[in-house]
Image (spheres, rainbow, N blue to C red):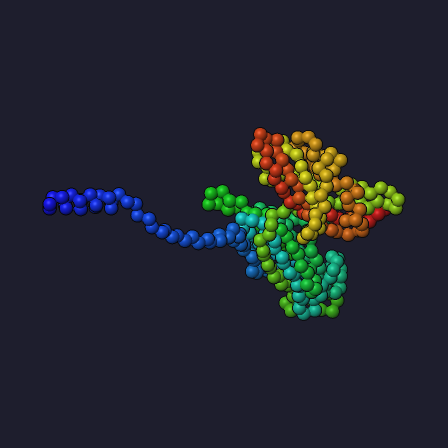
Length: 334
Protein backbone atom coordinates (compact mmCIF):
# COMPACT_ATOMS: atom_id res chain seq x y z
CA UNK A 1 0.00 0.00 0.00
CA UNK A 2 2.81 2.36 0.90
CA UNK A 3 4.51 1.65 -2.42
CA UNK A 4 1.30 2.51 -4.29
CA UNK A 5 0.91 5.82 -2.44
CA UNK A 6 4.53 6.70 -3.15
CA UNK A 7 4.04 5.94 -6.83
CA UNK A 8 0.90 8.10 -6.99
CA UNK A 9 2.70 11.02 -5.32
CA UNK A 10 5.67 10.70 -7.66
CA UNK A 11 3.39 10.77 -10.71
CA UNK A 12 1.56 13.79 -9.32
CA UNK A 13 4.84 15.65 -8.95
CA UNK A 14 5.82 14.80 -12.53
CA UNK A 15 2.52 16.12 -13.82
CA UNK A 16 2.96 19.29 -11.77
CA UNK A 17 6.42 19.92 -13.20
CA UNK A 18 5.13 19.44 -16.74
CA UNK A 19 2.42 22.12 -16.52
CA UNK A 20 3.69 25.52 -17.87
CA UNK A 21 3.63 28.48 -15.48
CA UNK A 22 1.70 31.48 -16.91
CA UNK A 23 3.12 34.83 -15.59
CA UNK A 24 2.64 38.54 -16.47
CA UNK A 25 5.78 40.41 -17.49
CA UNK A 26 6.06 44.18 -17.49
CA UNK A 27 8.69 46.52 -18.94
CA UNK A 28 9.31 50.20 -19.33
CA UNK A 29 11.19 52.31 -21.91
CA UNK A 30 12.26 55.91 -21.64
CA UNK A 31 13.29 58.15 -24.55
CA UNK A 32 15.93 60.82 -24.37
CA UNK A 33 16.46 63.63 -26.86
CA UNK A 34 19.98 63.83 -28.21
CA UNK A 35 20.58 67.31 -29.59
CA UNK A 36 22.88 67.78 -32.52
CA UNK A 37 23.59 71.44 -31.97
CA UNK A 38 26.97 72.91 -32.87
CA UNK A 39 29.32 73.92 -30.09
CA UNK A 40 30.62 77.42 -30.70
CA UNK A 41 34.40 77.38 -30.65
CA UNK A 42 35.38 80.94 -31.46
CA UNK A 43 38.10 83.34 -30.33
CA UNK A 44 37.59 87.11 -30.32
CA UNK A 45 40.42 89.69 -30.14
CA UNK A 46 40.46 91.78 -26.96
CA UNK A 47 42.95 94.58 -27.70
CA UNK A 48 44.63 96.15 -30.72
CA UNK A 49 46.81 99.25 -30.58
CA UNK A 50 46.37 102.04 -33.12
CA UNK A 51 49.55 104.05 -33.72
CA UNK A 52 48.84 107.69 -34.67
CA UNK A 53 51.90 108.99 -36.55
CA UNK A 54 50.96 112.39 -38.05
CA UNK A 55 54.56 113.47 -38.70
CA UNK A 56 55.48 110.24 -40.51
CA UNK A 57 58.26 109.21 -38.16
CA UNK A 58 59.96 105.81 -38.63
CA UNK A 59 58.16 103.13 -36.63
CA UNK A 60 60.37 102.03 -33.74
CA UNK A 61 58.00 99.68 -31.93
CA UNK A 62 58.12 95.90 -31.65
CA UNK A 63 57.63 94.20 -35.02
CA UNK A 64 56.00 90.75 -35.29
CA UNK A 65 56.40 88.86 -38.55
CA UNK A 66 53.16 88.77 -40.52
CA UNK A 67 51.50 91.46 -38.43
CA UNK A 68 51.34 94.03 -41.21
CA UNK A 69 53.73 96.50 -39.55
CA UNK A 70 57.33 96.52 -40.71
CA UNK A 71 60.33 98.17 -39.08
CA UNK A 72 60.81 101.80 -40.18
CA UNK A 73 57.28 102.09 -41.64
CA UNK A 74 56.16 105.74 -41.89
CA UNK A 75 52.41 105.36 -42.31
CA UNK A 76 50.34 107.93 -40.42
CA UNK A 77 48.08 105.26 -38.94
CA UNK A 78 49.56 101.86 -38.17
CA UNK A 79 47.91 98.82 -36.64
CA UNK A 80 48.85 95.16 -36.42
CA UNK A 81 46.43 92.69 -37.96
CA UNK A 82 43.90 91.19 -35.53
CA UNK A 83 41.57 88.27 -36.16
CA UNK A 84 38.48 86.37 -35.13
CA UNK A 85 39.01 82.62 -35.37
CA UNK A 86 36.18 80.09 -35.55
CA UNK A 87 36.82 76.38 -35.08
CA UNK A 88 33.10 75.66 -35.02
CA UNK A 89 32.16 72.67 -37.19
CA UNK A 90 29.19 74.51 -38.71
CA UNK A 91 28.60 77.89 -40.30
CA UNK A 92 28.75 80.85 -37.93
CA UNK A 93 27.29 84.33 -38.36
CA UNK A 94 29.45 86.97 -36.68
CA UNK A 95 28.05 90.43 -36.02
CA UNK A 96 30.39 93.26 -35.04
CA UNK A 97 29.39 96.74 -33.92
CA UNK A 98 32.00 99.50 -34.42
CA UNK A 99 31.99 102.85 -32.61
CA UNK A 100 34.89 105.24 -33.09
CA UNK A 101 36.04 107.79 -30.53
CA UNK A 102 38.43 110.74 -30.71
CA UNK A 103 40.02 112.72 -27.88
CA UNK A 104 41.68 116.09 -27.46
CA UNK A 105 41.32 118.23 -30.57
CA UNK A 106 41.17 115.32 -33.03
CA UNK A 107 38.11 114.84 -35.21
CA UNK A 108 37.00 112.19 -37.68
CA UNK A 109 37.09 112.83 -41.42
CA UNK A 110 34.91 110.82 -43.80
CA UNK A 111 37.43 111.25 -46.64
CA UNK A 112 41.21 110.74 -46.87
CA UNK A 113 43.19 113.62 -45.36
CA UNK A 114 45.62 115.17 -47.84
CA UNK A 115 49.10 116.52 -47.04
CA UNK A 116 48.99 120.16 -45.96
CA UNK A 117 45.63 119.89 -44.17
CA UNK A 118 45.73 122.33 -41.25
CA UNK A 119 43.11 120.73 -39.01
CA UNK A 120 43.42 117.76 -36.69
CA UNK A 121 41.47 115.36 -38.85
CA UNK A 122 41.73 111.58 -38.86
CA UNK A 123 40.43 109.36 -41.65
CA UNK A 124 40.36 105.96 -39.93
CA UNK A 125 39.66 102.92 -42.09
CA UNK A 126 39.18 99.24 -41.28
CA UNK A 127 39.98 96.57 -43.87
CA UNK A 128 38.34 93.18 -43.21
CA UNK A 129 38.53 89.89 -45.05
CA UNK A 130 37.53 86.28 -44.35
CA UNK A 131 39.64 83.22 -45.09
CA UNK A 132 41.03 79.99 -43.68
CA UNK A 133 44.34 81.54 -42.60
CA UNK A 134 45.28 84.39 -40.30
CA UNK A 135 46.74 86.88 -42.79
CA UNK A 136 46.90 90.63 -43.24
CA UNK A 137 43.66 91.64 -45.02
CA UNK A 138 43.89 93.43 -48.35
CA UNK A 139 41.32 95.66 -50.01
CA UNK A 140 39.51 94.21 -53.00
CA UNK A 141 39.29 95.98 -56.36
CA UNK A 142 36.26 98.08 -55.36
CA UNK A 143 37.16 98.63 -51.69
CA UNK A 144 33.91 96.93 -50.74
CA UNK A 145 35.65 95.35 -47.74
CA UNK A 146 36.90 98.67 -46.33
CA UNK A 147 34.92 100.62 -43.72
CA UNK A 148 35.38 104.26 -42.72
CA UNK A 149 35.18 104.54 -38.93
CA UNK A 150 33.32 107.42 -37.29
CA UNK A 151 31.72 108.18 -33.94
CA UNK A 152 28.42 106.84 -35.32
CA UNK A 153 27.69 103.19 -34.56
CA UNK A 154 28.09 100.86 -37.54
CA UNK A 155 27.30 97.14 -37.81
CA UNK A 156 28.91 94.55 -40.04
CA UNK A 157 27.97 90.88 -40.51
CA UNK A 158 29.99 87.98 -41.86
CA UNK A 159 29.10 84.32 -42.34
CA UNK A 160 32.03 81.99 -41.82
CA UNK A 161 31.89 78.50 -43.36
CA UNK A 162 32.40 75.46 -41.12
CA UNK A 163 35.89 74.70 -39.86
CA UNK A 164 37.36 71.53 -41.35
CA UNK A 165 38.46 68.57 -39.24
CA UNK A 166 41.02 65.91 -40.12
CA UNK A 167 41.60 63.46 -37.29
CA UNK A 168 42.23 65.59 -34.21
CA UNK A 169 43.32 68.62 -36.25
CA UNK A 170 40.84 71.43 -36.92
CA UNK A 171 41.52 74.13 -39.51
CA UNK A 172 39.69 77.26 -38.47
CA UNK A 173 38.03 80.06 -40.41
CA UNK A 174 39.11 83.66 -39.85
CA UNK A 175 37.89 87.22 -40.09
CA UNK A 176 41.09 89.27 -40.44
CA UNK A 177 41.00 93.00 -39.71
CA UNK A 178 43.42 95.92 -39.70
CA UNK A 179 43.10 99.69 -39.18
CA UNK A 180 44.84 102.18 -41.45
CA UNK A 181 44.26 105.70 -42.75
CA UNK A 182 45.58 109.24 -42.92
CA UNK A 183 45.56 112.33 -40.73
CA UNK A 184 46.51 116.01 -40.88
CA UNK A 185 50.23 116.74 -40.88
CA UNK A 186 50.32 120.53 -40.41
CA UNK A 187 47.69 121.52 -37.81
CA UNK A 188 47.37 125.30 -37.72
CA UNK A 189 46.38 126.00 -34.12
CA UNK A 190 48.67 123.63 -32.19
CA UNK A 191 50.86 120.60 -32.89
CA UNK A 192 49.64 117.07 -32.26
CA UNK A 193 50.05 115.98 -28.64
CA UNK A 194 49.40 112.79 -26.68
CA UNK A 195 46.01 114.25 -25.72
CA UNK A 196 44.88 113.94 -29.34
CA UNK A 197 43.70 110.36 -29.67
CA UNK A 198 41.69 108.07 -31.90
CA UNK A 199 40.25 104.65 -31.02
CA UNK A 200 37.48 102.24 -31.97
CA UNK A 201 35.41 100.06 -29.68
CA UNK A 202 34.13 96.79 -31.15
CA UNK A 203 31.56 94.38 -29.74
CA UNK A 204 31.19 90.91 -31.22
CA UNK A 205 28.40 88.35 -31.29
CA UNK A 206 28.41 84.92 -32.91
CA UNK A 207 25.62 82.40 -33.53
CA UNK A 208 25.58 79.13 -35.51
CA UNK A 209 23.51 79.31 -38.69
CA UNK A 210 22.16 76.98 -41.33
CA UNK A 211 24.81 76.43 -43.95
CA UNK A 212 23.10 77.97 -46.99
CA UNK A 213 25.55 79.18 -49.64
CA UNK A 214 25.18 82.86 -50.55
CA UNK A 215 25.30 83.65 -54.28
CA UNK A 216 25.58 87.27 -55.50
CA UNK A 217 23.42 88.12 -58.54
CA UNK A 218 23.03 91.35 -60.53
CA UNK A 219 19.69 92.02 -62.24
CA UNK A 220 19.20 94.86 -64.71
CA UNK A 221 15.69 96.30 -64.84
CA UNK A 222 14.59 96.82 -68.47
CA UNK A 223 13.94 100.19 -70.07
CA UNK A 224 10.33 101.28 -70.42
CA UNK A 225 8.56 99.04 -72.91
CA UNK A 226 11.42 96.57 -73.18
CA UNK A 227 11.16 92.92 -72.27
CA UNK A 228 12.32 91.98 -68.80
CA UNK A 229 15.49 89.86 -68.74
CA UNK A 230 15.81 86.45 -67.13
CA UNK A 231 17.89 85.96 -64.01
CA UNK A 232 20.76 83.48 -64.21
CA UNK A 233 23.10 82.22 -61.50
CA UNK A 234 25.78 79.60 -61.05
CA UNK A 235 25.03 77.08 -58.30
CA UNK A 236 28.28 75.19 -58.40
CA UNK A 237 28.36 71.41 -58.11
CA UNK A 238 25.74 70.04 -55.67
CA UNK A 239 27.39 69.77 -52.28
CA UNK A 240 25.46 66.65 -51.27
CA UNK A 241 25.56 64.69 -54.53
CA UNK A 242 25.45 60.93 -53.90
CA UNK A 243 28.26 60.18 -56.32
CA UNK A 244 30.91 62.75 -57.07
CA UNK A 245 31.55 61.17 -60.46
CA UNK A 246 27.91 60.88 -61.55
CA UNK A 247 26.10 63.25 -63.86
CA UNK A 248 23.04 64.91 -62.40
CA UNK A 249 20.12 67.14 -63.29
CA UNK A 250 17.67 69.44 -61.55
CA UNK A 251 14.24 67.88 -61.20
CA UNK A 252 12.44 70.64 -59.30
CA UNK A 253 13.04 74.23 -58.30
CA UNK A 254 11.30 76.52 -55.78
CA UNK A 255 12.08 80.08 -54.80
CA UNK A 256 10.77 82.82 -52.55
CA UNK A 257 11.69 85.44 -49.98
CA UNK A 258 13.62 84.26 -46.89
CA UNK A 259 11.12 82.95 -44.35
CA UNK A 260 8.28 82.83 -46.87
CA UNK A 261 5.59 80.27 -46.07
CA UNK A 262 4.71 79.74 -49.73
CA UNK A 263 7.42 79.11 -52.29
CA UNK A 264 6.96 79.57 -56.03
CA UNK A 265 7.55 76.39 -58.01
CA UNK A 266 9.33 76.78 -61.35
CA UNK A 267 8.72 74.00 -63.89
CA UNK A 268 11.76 71.74 -64.29
CA UNK A 269 11.99 72.11 -68.03
CA UNK A 270 14.63 73.25 -70.47
CA UNK A 271 12.86 76.60 -70.70
CA UNK A 272 13.69 77.38 -67.06
CA UNK A 273 16.71 75.28 -66.22
CA UNK A 274 19.60 74.74 -68.57
CA UNK A 275 20.33 71.24 -67.29
CA UNK A 276 16.85 69.98 -66.49
CA UNK A 277 15.97 67.82 -69.49
CA UNK A 278 19.17 65.80 -69.92
CA UNK A 279 21.76 64.30 -67.63
CA UNK A 280 24.69 66.67 -67.36
CA UNK A 281 26.92 68.37 -64.86
CA UNK A 282 25.73 71.88 -65.66
CA UNK A 283 25.76 74.45 -62.89
CA UNK A 284 23.74 77.32 -64.34
CA UNK A 285 20.10 77.90 -63.44
CA UNK A 286 17.87 80.43 -65.20
CA UNK A 287 14.62 81.78 -63.78
CA UNK A 288 12.44 83.14 -66.55
CA UNK A 289 11.43 86.80 -66.40
CA UNK A 290 7.75 85.88 -66.23
CA UNK A 291 8.39 84.43 -62.78
CA UNK A 292 10.21 87.54 -61.56
CA UNK A 293 8.21 90.58 -62.60
CA UNK A 294 6.59 91.01 -59.18
CA UNK A 295 9.59 89.94 -57.11
CA UNK A 296 12.15 92.30 -58.69
CA UNK A 297 10.34 95.46 -59.66
CA UNK A 298 12.48 98.27 -58.24
CA UNK A 299 16.14 99.13 -57.78
CA UNK A 300 17.85 98.07 -54.59
CA UNK A 301 19.00 94.86 -52.94
CA UNK A 302 16.77 91.91 -52.20
CA UNK A 303 17.26 88.33 -51.12
CA UNK A 304 15.73 85.15 -52.45
CA UNK A 305 15.98 81.62 -51.13
CA UNK A 306 15.97 78.92 -53.79
CA UNK A 307 15.62 75.19 -53.27
CA UNK A 308 16.90 72.93 -56.04
CA UNK A 309 16.20 69.21 -56.08
CA UNK A 310 18.96 67.21 -57.76
CA UNK A 311 18.90 63.66 -59.04
CA UNK A 312 22.05 61.70 -59.83
CA UNK A 313 22.39 59.53 -62.90
CA UNK A 314 22.94 56.36 -60.87
CA UNK A 315 21.14 52.99 -60.78
CA UNK A 316 19.47 53.78 -57.47
CA UNK A 317 19.13 57.53 -57.92
CA UNK A 318 17.94 59.53 -54.95
CA UNK A 319 16.50 63.03 -55.12
CA UNK A 320 18.39 65.45 -52.88
CA UNK A 321 17.71 69.10 -52.14
CA UNK A 322 20.14 71.98 -51.71
CA UNK A 323 19.20 75.50 -50.62
CA UNK A 324 20.90 78.68 -51.78
CA UNK A 325 20.41 82.29 -50.79
CA UNK A 326 20.60 84.74 -53.67
CA UNK A 327 21.59 88.30 -52.85
CA UNK A 328 20.17 90.15 -55.85
CA UNK A 329 21.39 93.66 -56.66
CA UNK A 330 18.65 95.19 -58.82
CA UNK A 331 19.95 97.99 -61.07
CA UNK A 332 17.68 100.82 -62.10
CA UNK A 333 16.33 100.86 -65.65
CA UNK A 334 18.53 102.68 -68.13
